[in-house]
Length: 287
Image (tube, rainbow, N blue to C red):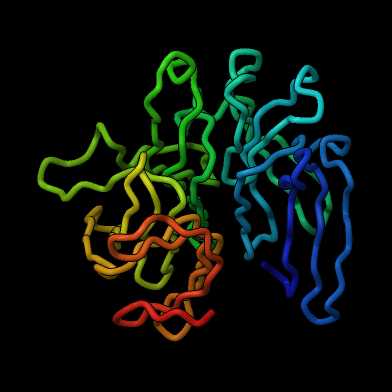
């Protein structure tokens, strides 16, 4: 959200992936479709399981996307910043598994392609179900987690997960901070995952990473990454509850509020349950 407007890009309608672009004016409570197909305006093609990242200071929206392949027909999938998107396993051998990187200039209403292959530039591979956030003051974008889609996964039954990356907007360079195979020996370990949430505290220069899923394990951990000190601190949210498929998390008055799509209670099985949770010293369910 920026300038009193919320932006919505693409998604899946239950049958096909979408390439439409919408803005919602909070003051007037009105939706406006700025584009029915962003690919026809120099932007990304249709996508789902992606994320949008907004630079509120410079009024820009960043997206990582996969080049469109005509043979996909109505199931083209793409990745909004950041990034990624889901590709049906039956189609992965038929397409080029690379990510494009786009930025949308809100005031000019124009798209710009930053990169045609993010991984070749030092960034993450094609991923989906990741999280990302932006430090507008320092012009840095952080991306963590998500499942990787690559040529190795075509012949493997094991899932691969992406690590924690930083993108310097001014220099247009990527930096891998840590992943499953590359973590400091002295540090606690941060498991890459999906269905989690990540927030930036710009005042404390810290990333909050919590909950999610890795393989069949549902996680209830809470990490604070100190950006300046490159230090990681680990806490547990709670022992009786685990959240996954986190749709959105925000902060207010030193509290976290999150919208979860999956709940796993103690000794129970996963339950598809859309609920809002507030974290102070412990999690309390509002809805």
